Image (cartoon, rainbow, N blue to C red; front, side, top):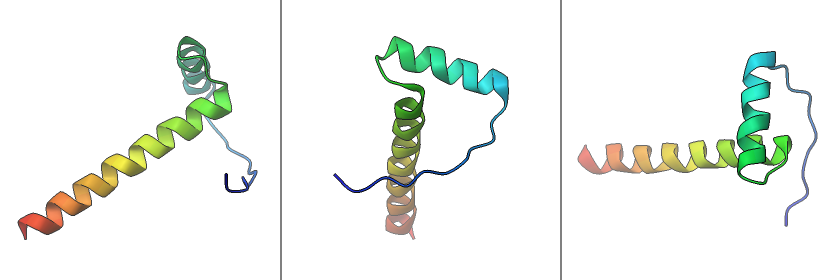
Length: 56
C-alpha cells in the first residue's frame, strides 16, 4: 500500500457527524469513510470523463 499523507481538513461539524455515523454503519473509521467517499467520487469522475470523451 502506498504511503499516506496527513493533512488538516476543515469541515462543517454537521457534515462530520453525518460522515462519522455513516462510517460506523459501514464499519469504517471516520478517516476511512472520508477516504472511501473520495475514492468513489474519483472513480465516478473518471467514468464520466471517459464517457464524455467517447461521445465527442
